[in-house]
Image (tube, rainbow, N blue to C red; front, top):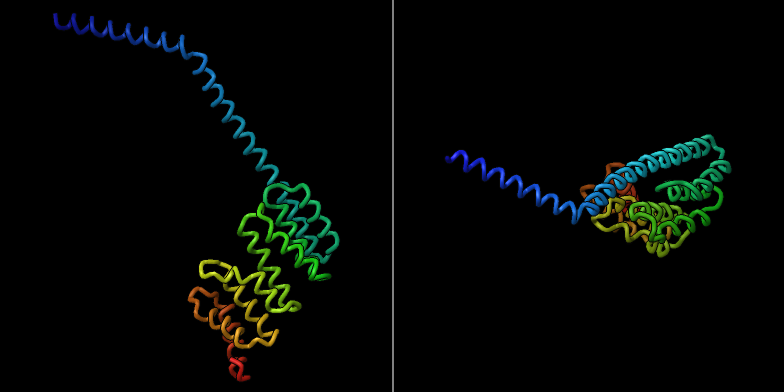
Length: 221
């Protein structure tokens, strides 16, 4: 008798579940189908975009390498033209990288033009922060030979923060700029900051030590 009761209860439960599912499907069937279709279409679109994005990035990368090859072969004008084209219609980060590389090449002919272009990149809020910092640092180094210390400081002193990975090169540029402009105390301060930073790369630290020794020998340290 117990088995018959259990069997009857199971049949009733199954029938109830069946009726509930039918009711749910009648009420929400179209919505369920719509959601399923949206998921399938969304997955297809995402995969298609990922594939297309990869192709575009690969093509831009090939063009960037080709322009770099022109630069290494001393075909500067052709390289600058190739970078300019990539800046117009490249994909991803390649347009801004091409812009910066072209500015570096232009520095050989006209440093002022290169500095202006690199500064423009550094001030462009649409460019990733890391690339903006690189542009700022490059501009600062180009300014060392021609600009007053104040201009170099305005450009790159922001990079000397203890947490900034570019602080070592920025401090070196500021030390050299101060030295070239006759501000030997400030130069010594920057070189000491380089020496006191335990994370300073060996080559940068060695150059800072040489400059400090030179300043000390001349009684300017």
